[in-house]
Length: 210
Length: 210
Image (cartoon, rainbow over all chains, first blue to last red; front, side, top):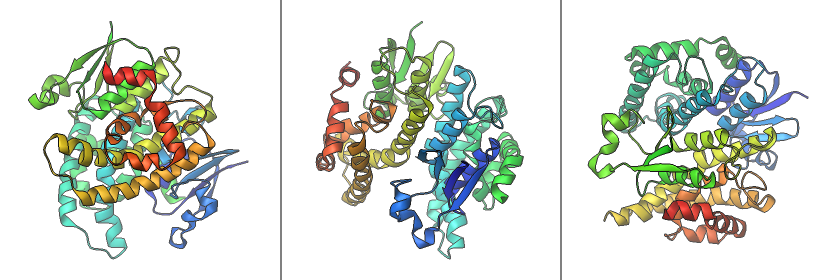
């Protein structure tokens, strides 16, 4: 039975899992959850994710939610499919683990606030809060300065190969690169090269167009 | 050579790693970083964590930061020490992984805001923002409702045994249980029993008193 991914168009968390499934070359059925109809708050969907958020994954009798838990499950359970996104020696995995947490704890909150203000709000006809943008651009610059230093030492965040630590950034980059925030990435040569490299990956192109 | 943990008194992230080291019965040297002297912003400490935050771990030639990355590294690398905090069969690990992400993505932000307003601000002579408390108490109640349902099905968040998914909550509980927020846990019988159970663990008592 094929895996089922329950998600929504425009959901960065859904895209994160789609990117992982594409890299792992895993076939799956995509089930669209219509959030404007509150389908994510129905008892049926709440049994998949009690917080009522997309995405959710069904793999046989296993039901999972939280995008980063799903990607780690896929990387751990299907190491032979597609490319290896996490399962290296313990020291390398430890370093990959650090940068997975950096995305989750440092990058995500800032990136999602900027994406909301500059990409989503204009789509919904809402007014961008310039003060929030300014504050979070400053925070993002501090994070990207650390990334620039890290990426001057290794091609990818976790080391010499592309891993989940890089992949988890892709959905935010997709939305931020359509806004003025892109200039903060462009201003840092290693960050800029890394962002281009990972966004040109065939699996990501497939995940965002399929 | 013994592991070295660089951390600070009163840091919840430091306590998270101390709890894990105690459960794993791993001996280590604790190196206090004096944050009032800005020791976490010195070049020496920035070489351990480029974001200038505690904790950081040194295990031989491996330098790690981000508390949740460190605990996962310890659980993965030293499965035979103390109790097994993560390394089960893949399906169990997947479910544990979901609840590790729930703590990180849902509980932490709310818990840390409430701890800041109600536990830390009074210590520093600052004024608590009642509106922030009210807003985050409402959000915490929604999260704890999901926990109550989950903990009515299994003794711990990840299943029948204590894992990192539970352990990661301990530092926030320590601070929140000294505030009026404790009543939100007390009002939910399964959450209340779980919170008591994990806070009475000998390793946690050791981590918070040693």
